[in-house]
Image 1 (cartoon, rainbow, N blue to C red):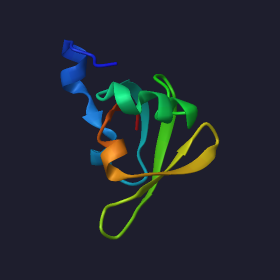
Image 2: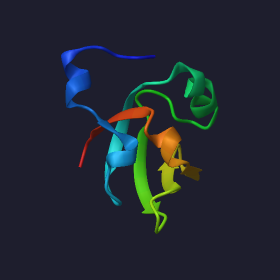
Image 3: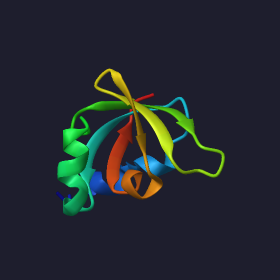
Length: 85
């Protein structure tokens, strides 16, 4: 679900968020990965906290829907988010 609006310009990719930040999922860039991410609890409107980033930057560890999840960097690059803290 690609979102093309002024709000989309203000959003960041999940892969660009710093450790310790909490964000809200806004949209996905790649519809092919949308179903996989949705099944893992990554749905628009859901809060995500960035817990850790591997030493070489891939994967990243997040908390979503009350559980821990690791995402590959290429998956995180497809998630557009908005920072809330």
